[in-house]
Each structure stands twice: as C-alpha cells, then as structure tokens.
Amino acid sequence: IQSSAPEAVPGRLRTLPLGQLNFLHTTDTHGWHAGHLQEASYGADWGDYISFTQRLREKIEAEGNDLLLVDTGDRVEGNGLYDASSPTGKYTRQIFSQQNIDIICSGNHELYKANTTDREFIDLIPAYGSNYLASNLDVIHPKSGERVPLAQRFRKFKTKNHGIKVTAFGFLYDFTGNDKNSFVQKVEDTIKEQWFQDAIKDRSVDVFLVAGHVGLRQSEFSNVFKAIRAAQWDVPIVFFGGHTHIRDYVKYDDKAYGLESGRYMETIGFQSVSGLPSRKHDEKKLELRTASYSFARRYIDNNLFSFYSHTGLDESTFPTEVGQNVSAQITKAREALNLDEVFGCNPRVLWMSRVPYPHKDSIFSWLGSRVIPEKAIDDHRKDYPRIIYANTGAMRFDIFEGPFTRDTTFIVSPFTSGFRYIKNVPFDIADRLLKVINDGNNFLGLSHSLLTDRQLKSPDQINLTQDYVASSTQNQHTTDPEDPPLTPGYTTHDDAGDDGDDTIHSEISHYQIPNCIESRVNINEDQNSHESQEETVDVVFLDFIQPWMLEALRMLGAEYTSEDTIPYAGGRSFTEMIAEWVSENWQGDC
Ligand SMILES: O=c1ccn([C@@H]2O[C@H](COP(=O)(O)O)[C@@H](O)[C@H]2O)c(=O)[nH]1
Image (cartoon, rainbow, N blue to C red; front, top):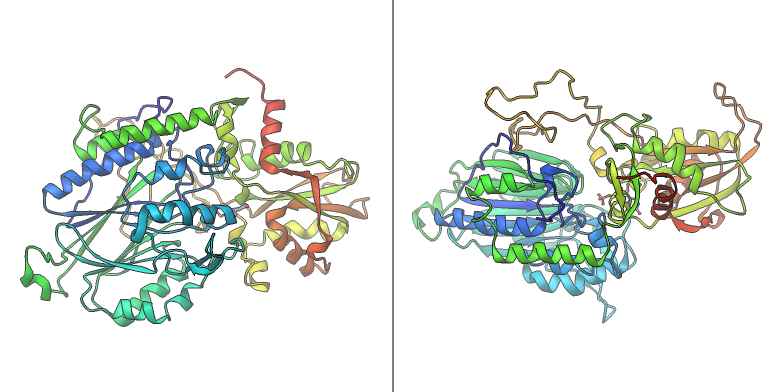
C-alpha cells in the first residue's frame, strides 16, 4: 500500500464463494496501479493485489482447487503513474507484469496511439507469452513492418490441480479509433474463421473462457456465445468483459455466465465454477458433461480490509515479498514523476455523475462555465463570437476537495486532445448543433454507422438508461445493529441479484450526462428566444469529436470537411488548459 493511501474502513463483508475453478479478474485499470490515494474503499495498490493473489492461491490450492487470473485490457492512460512519464508507461509495464496472469488481452486504449501498441508488442507480450491472446487483432510489426497477429489467437491449457481443459479466447470490441499500426477485425467476422470454428468444435474441452475488452451486454459477446452454443450445447462458458467500466454479471444460459469488474483498480472481480470434471482425480467423471454446474461471483472492493478478510490473514501475515517489492517500486516511480506536486487546492468536490448536469457540483458545469471559456482562447480569434464543444467522455474522474496535483491532471483528463475550429458558421446552424449531438436516439449513429453517440460519453454512461437516484432515507446500517455504519459505495444489481458486492454499502446516485457540453462566448443573445445579433460564429471543438461535429453540421445542412477545420488556441491540450486554470484560480491552502 502507498503510505499516503487512506486506511481501509472496516465494513460488513460477504465471503468469497470459492469453488472448484476460481478466477480473479481485473479490467480497465488505466494506470491506477498505485490504488486510490483519496478513497479508502479502493486504497490497495498493485503490489497488494499480487500479495492477495498469492495468499488466495495458497488457500484455494490447499483444498485441491484451481485459481486463474484474467485481465481484459485498458491498462494504460488515465493516471499519472502511466501518463506522466516520457515515454508514457515507462514504469507501469514493468510494475504490472510482475503479476502472473493466465489470460490477458488488449483494450482500445492500447491501440489509440501507435507508440502504445508498439510498446505493448515489444514489452508486454513477451512478458506474458502464450497467455496474451488477440483473437481479432493484428499489428504492423515494429521491426519488420509486416502485418502480424498482435498475439496468439487462442490458447488451450489444463489447470494445475484438477487438470481441467480450458480453451480461451481474447477479443476486443469492434473498435474503430485505432492508430494506423493496428487492425481490429469485427468479432462477427472473426468467429466465422476456420481456426475459431475448429477451436469451438473440439469436444475434449471442459470449459470455454472468453476474455474480451467488450461490455458483457454488447452484441460482440452475444455473437461469440451463439457461435459456441451452435457448436456445443453443453460446455460451460465463462466470459470476462470490460470497457463499460461497471460491475456486472450476466447469465447467457444456465451454463454460461460473464463477469465485468469495473474500472480504475476499484474492483477485483471474482468468479467460480464448480461441477467440472477433475481429470487428475476422478477420470470416471469425464463422461458427466451434462452434470449441473454452479457459478458464483463477487466484486471485491480493492482495499486491505477486504484482502485480509478474504484470506483470513492480517497486516503481518498477508504481505508477500513480491507484493511488497512492487509497492516499493510504485512509490519510487511516483516520486520520480513528481506526481504529488500541488497545482492548486480544490475548494469543493466536483462530480462526474453523482449530481445531474447542470449542477453547481458538476465537473461539467465547472468546465462549461469557467475553464473552457477562460482557457480555450485563440489569440487571433479572441474577439469573435464562438460556441465551444467538449465531449463528456473527455473527463474521466471526479475531482475531490483538497490538493489538485500533477497526478490529478491525468486522472481527470489523460487525453492529449486539443481544440480545432471552423470559422464563420451561420449562427442558426451552430445554435442547433448541441441538440443534434445530444439527441438521445443516437441520431448521428443512425446516419453514419461508425459515429455512435456512445463513443462521446464516459464508458460508465453507456448502459445507463435512466437516472439512478439514491434514496435520501436509505438505511445507513445493515439489519444487524452491531455492524459498523455503511459507507457509500457500489450497490450492484446484476443478473444474479443484489448480493454481488463483497462490501455492503449505502447507495450512490448516478445520473445520465449528455454526450457533449457547450460554452457560448461573446454571443449576444436573448436567453429566452435564443435570437442573436450574430450572423456567424466560430464553432470550436475538441479534435476527438471532429467526425461527429462534421456529421452533425451536415445533418443541419452545412457541408464542411476536415480541410475546413483549423487548430485553435495554439494546439494546447485540454488537459494543459485545466491544469493552468487550477494553478491560476485555486490558490488556497490545503
Ligand atoms: O482522445 C480521446 C479518447 C477517448 N475519449 C473518450 O473515452 C472513451 C473511451 O473510453 P475507454 O476507457 O476506452 O472505454 C471514448 O468513448 C471517449 O468518450 C476521449 O474523449 N478522447
């Protein structure tokens, strides 16, 4: 654990439903390998997770059972530990790869930038060898320049104790925002390929393991499920998903379940399956393919209280040598990167989605009313009327009260996007742009299949179809008055019910946030009628959303191309602007 991490708060815990074949799952860690230094529920670091894995393995193997580890990508971008180094990820790949992982695959963030993909290929894939799977991903080999699979397409292996035969795959959803040195083949095309068809027809397999940087309820996974079921009706399947940043557990049928384990090292996912044959101990059971299997899941809050409780250990018996070394390496890396350097002192918490938008405590209201109008300024156009657009997915995390550090800049906005603009767009068109972009019916996605609006917002908003408002009168206690009071946290509802979270928490509200926000600057308009004296305005937008902006303009009858867009505000990144604004405006004491 990092010395500045807050101590875990004891809570009422549900135990781990250990079984014959057990899994621990991480996804979308996004560089948060130091853990959460301002939130007690998620304060454990990657070194603690290594200790937890080693200790839990000892416990599981002592019973003769098996434990496998899975990671489903987006390990990079989103925290200073990864983003603040030059080159990015200088420390994290070495830190991360000290965890033994049995099945690992790539997320979309490993592919946004060519250099990230090259480092994945050069550093991480050799560290994991045949455990790294890329069922639908090719890359340009960094040395030979040839197109090659990023990693092996699938893997067959036997578990250590029961000798269970596993066939595993590693998919990425149908991502299209990758750089030029990678190729993502659609999942629906991949599953028609001969190697996949042969792999799923193998009758000797005991369990299919489908890992993927794919939301569990996305069509990519239901297509894989249908393909496997068309080949084999009776083999159990375990899915491990990612990308949508939520805790989720899905029942595909009574022999197929999937687990998604949140985001940012908040959650260590646990899944178990029992009823599989034990090839080492019980050859007779091999014929019992139709035996009833049992599946279970748990979402573990990433903190030492949970880790100690689930292993039955304590401060002195829990840490392992490797785990402690990794924690020390994280501390050193954070120091080398100067991540605790304070840029400003935030007077009050700003939430991504715990409050509606607009709201005085909304990060988006703060950006739209202060940061964007005050910092997104182009010296040559500063007196012109303009409307500035930012997608809400550009923001990644809440800003807590207190020190806003170098680390916070990357946590809040890890992207390198800056602004571009189109000059002199008719006001009556610009005035309606936001409505088109925020249309709840995926208007743009219908007109242009690559431009779904889900790509504009934060991943945890993708499946949120209505506001979730925590009851103000909710019980702050469990039914047992002896239990400690509940702390706010995850209260997950999934296909198996409401008892998935290991820690019993009180609820947190989660509101729907629009795809994009706008800031209007130098525009004289009647607030009620929206009538303006301006005939034209500059339309300024984050470069990431340019394709959506051009499509929305086209739908409103204004044809522009990428040739018409010009860098704005000297090409400075949005992240730099936020950090500057904080340095200039939040100069109190923390
Ligand atoms: O330059 C960028 C890249 C991405 N985004 C936003 O992030 C999500 C994808 O998040 P994941 O963690 O990969 O799931 C994307 O849909 C955008 O909303 C961005 O704003 N700018």
